[in-house]
Structures are given as C-alpha cells and as structure tokens.
Image 1: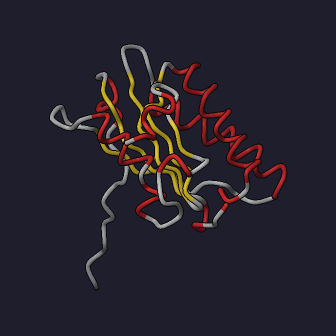
Image 2 (image 1 turned 180 degrees about the vertical axis):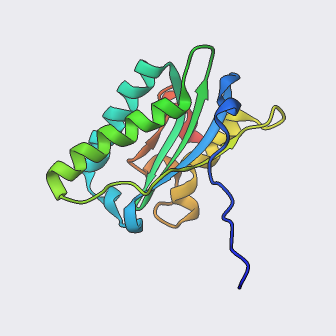
Image 3 (image 1 turned 135 degrees about the vertical axis):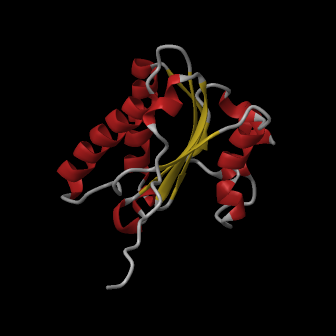
Length: 159
C-alpha cells in the first residue's frame, strides 16, 4: 500500500490569534478565476472589508485585490477576532457574489502568516500593495485601483 500524503495545514492554529499582532492573509478565488477584474465586485468587497473590520476590531493595514486573489495585512488587538473577521468577510461577499453570478467566490480556507516582531509592518504593507507592480499589471503601486490601506490611506502607496 503506498504511503498516504498528509497535506500541511494552510491555516495557523486559532490560539495564535489570541495575542495582538499583524497577520498577512491570502484569500484565493474559487478555481482561481479572475473575478477581481470586475470593478463592481471589487467595490462591494472593499465595502464588506471596511465594515467587517470595524465590526470585529481589526485594522486593515493593507489590501490588494489581484485578478484571482486578495492579499491582506491586518492587525488584531485586544478583543479583536481575526479568524471571525475573515469568516464574516468571506461569507458576506460569497453570498452577494453567488446571488449575481451563481458561482462560488472563494476557495476554501486561506493562507496566513504571523508577522514576527522583527518584521517591519509598514514594509509588509508596502509589499502587499506592490504586488500589482511585481506582477506587471501597473508601473507603480498607486496606479492599481484595487489596493490601499484603511489605516494609513494613500501614504502607503507612495513607497
């Protein structure tokens, strides 16, 4: 009998989120479809991101909607619930997208990384908003209409 392949979990254990900290998250679209080329879909997701962050006490330090996935850099503090924030966001946006398109919006789960103390949070945020430049979608981060920061505004786009 061949050995079974055990996949490494792509999510951190829930106890990791109990301490305040910054988290880099990547949420992929179902079947890696290029959903975020549609301005209306992205605008609806940005609004859900904003309201969900306020509701769950999570600071959105940076976000970047690429054609088939979303990069987030969020910071949780005392009393915030990052996993619940992501769950709420995915549910709300999935429901709205399915009503219009009849299709799933997100892949199951998401990838996450806890920033270490020695990692510069602003550098991580600049890295997130720099994704469209590295992918060849735009020449400068400020030219990508679907990136930003609710915490730092346009200042993060100038690096």
